[in-house]
Length: 116
Image 1 (cartoon, rainbow, N blue to C red):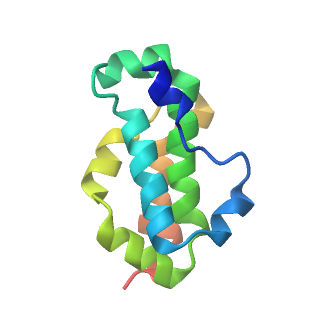
Image 2 (image 1 turned 180 degrees about the vertical axis):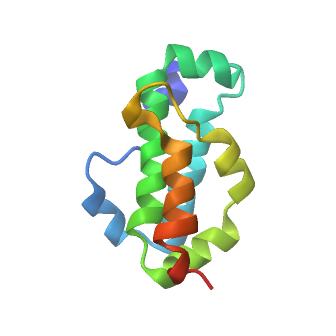
């Protein structure tokens, strides 16, 4: 578990995402999803034990969708397992951790005009 966490790809600043290729952005989403959904640890326990780590990875996924140019966003949406992303990203108890709600609002309201 700790070795997997050590290999986490969570950007310390959003500006770095602007220089990533489509495939690199998709890989970042996949890595964050793997970090959220540990192979040997059930997600409920992982969320409890590693809440800040999980929330950083969820935030990274949202930021990628948020910062993507329209063509990039469309490509990412069509190549990511979107249902799994919505399933794995949770609304946490604290106000700043309403990540599923934020992702839904981002894609279904704020960025819907960018989607084709």
